Structure formats: C-alpha cells, structure tokens
Length: 184
Image (tube, rainbow, N blue to C red):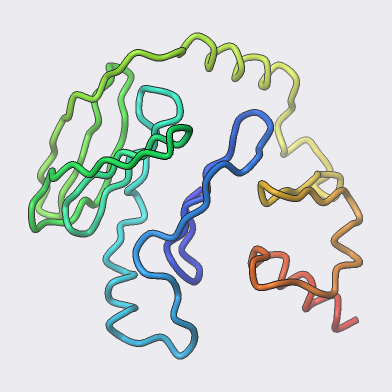
C-alpha cells in the first residue's frame, strides 16, 4: 500500500494473512506542522506510481525522484540501488508478465529492464486462487462486519466504536476514529 497523507509511506503485507512485513517512509520523515517548504517540495517530488512488485515473490521495486530504481528483497532485508534515469525522476513503474520492469521518466522516456528471476510463481498462484475461492466481493458485504488490520493488530466489528486513545504509531484512520468517539 502506498500512502501520502502526511509523508510518502509504503506498507507491504503478507498474503493471504495480511500481516505487515514492511513499513517505511520514502524520503525524509514528516518534520511536523507547519511543514517547511523545502520538505514539501522534496515530498511532492516522489511519484505516486513508483512502486511495483517484480516477477519474483518478495521483491519490491521503488523508483526515486533522483532516477534510481531500488530493488528491495523483503525476506533477505537486502537493498540494491540501480541507476536507471540519471538526473531524472522515475515517474511510473510496472512489472509485466514476461519479467521486464517498465520504468517511465517525466519526459516520456520508457525503459524496459530485464529483471526476470526464478521463483515459486506456481505457489503464489495457488495461494491467490485459494484466497479468491474463499472470498466474496466487498460490495455484497455489510462493511460494518469487516475485520480491520494495520498489519500488526486486528480490530473486530464493533471494536472501533470504543476506541478513544491512540499512540503516535497508530494509523491515521484510527486516530481520527478515536477523536470522533471522544466527541460523543
């Protein structure tokens, strides 16, 4: 999940358990309000379309405003930086079924990078198929009956109606819910 409410955040969840396996801020963390203009400029330099999973499970690719593509192997906790578009921002990225990574620059440049690696794609496909077989579309559900998670904790239906206190590490939506509950 890619967020940008108060900084450029990236959260990666294990599938199908939805356990958070990675949480990080892209660029500099939020310095607090009022936001310095130079920090805002650097924050807005990050594209909202700069993250993709590669063809191998457990690898996330992140494009930077400086033109680098970062290869992040989650389980190995290894980071490799690849200089792709020197002095030009990566504005969009996508992985395609043939194993290439498509990288776009602000001037219309498109690069196809070969990143194909071996991996247990069949196991991933089986997990997704099993998950989809046991689920229904959210539009046919009563949304008040859903369990919510931030990847670390889980809230069952009704739990959020009683939340009135949060910590600095809690997600923004939980802080808002606690503040609204405190008003009643």
